[in-house]
Length: 222
Length: 364
Image 1: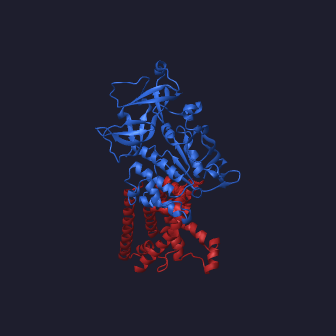
Image 2: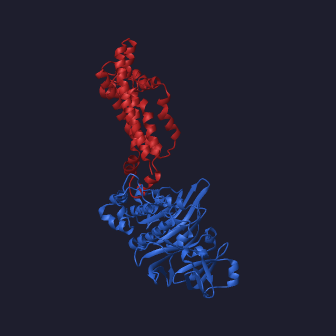
Image 3: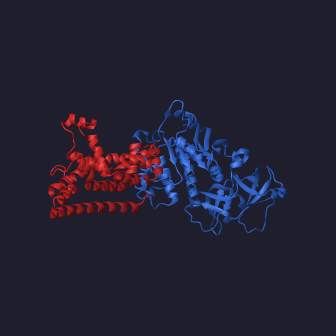
């Protein structure tokens, strides 16, 4: 049980870390600017939310498999492709949880008054300085909340993971996969233990998420 | 700075839907007002100068340095233009204290380029006492003073002001107007002041450019607002107020407060809080609140009767604005019908009757 929990946390954490810089960047682009091709970008990033995770997983399998460019690259560098490793599980969790994360960040960043950023610019701050001294400090609670939401989604990822990473105990078997395996083999009491762990992790993350959201809406942006 | 040529020289075209800004303008040192009704393109023009809007074509230079040119593909980003921009709602950073707000641009300026200290700026704007405060609970006037200080502390070569008084109550407007004058006299930063209030423009600016439908229709000293037929079409004289600066003092057995403006003295309404014996203050008197007469009136309840000489008579679309010399210029609104009876003209000696209660002291 400890091992399953450890793998689950490792996979979800890695997924969140992979996603964070991209989510911040895309969140800023869509929340603060009005880029051309906005609709296409929005549809693309939200696609994993609408697709069955199994489809996402299959797409990833094709993209990462040994016959794909990425697959040949990893084969060249690591000597094998990353299918059926915990890295593949993290990537699957990352793709599936990305929309939730980025959508929260878009909302948080679009709530920042653009006049404040313009003021910073005319006071001599470049775009990067403006982002880190104005935009991010004024939206960080939403950013953290979105990150947590993505983390929670990554914890519970099942469909895409089982396709690209399989269900290998001690390697890629996360809590949802382990529960599935136990239920399949009729070991219900063991399944219940894992269910309890899942519930505890989810409750803690969601509690922090909601607390952060309520704080950011209480403070408001003047 | 004037040795470096025009503060701003621009020639821009910018299309925004069914509105087109098409401007050619030279802005020299001093305080220049961009005057025009709402929708005339004033803010669009400022945004182009500040670098937040890219003109479709044209060029903009600041003290002979090109900051935008469509021909040469030059478009200096806003943070490298050295142009301060103060907007109507102040746009103070809510997560920073007053001091941190003011320090924002200051700390980004290399030490050798800092022409004055942070304290000096806070002193000019009289906000040292706010230093550690959060920005959330400041009054409108305080917010605008902090915004001005923040801009000045970034050492701009030019300051753009977009209706900085529009959202303020009358007393605060006076304070900010005073402060803008002080800033100019102490720091000599050229200012571009956007406003749709003819009273403010006449009280503050040295020169004015009149904007209408995205085009400059008149430029010159502020007097053109009353003389130029193009300019007069867009000016709203209906609530014209005289914004006059003077020195306060007290006199008589009642210790009544008065203000000296030019070579006249006006008794002020009772009950205003007084900061000191002599104080530079700004008062507002609506042109329609002043009564003009050719003979010295006697037995009046009005406290203020002053002698003046008519300088010029400016017809507006509904009435006449009589410009009277009291050492300063004061404008009195009279009807065409009244003029038929009075028959005054330049040089006529007149008396002005001003009720103390119609004098609004712009001071908090």
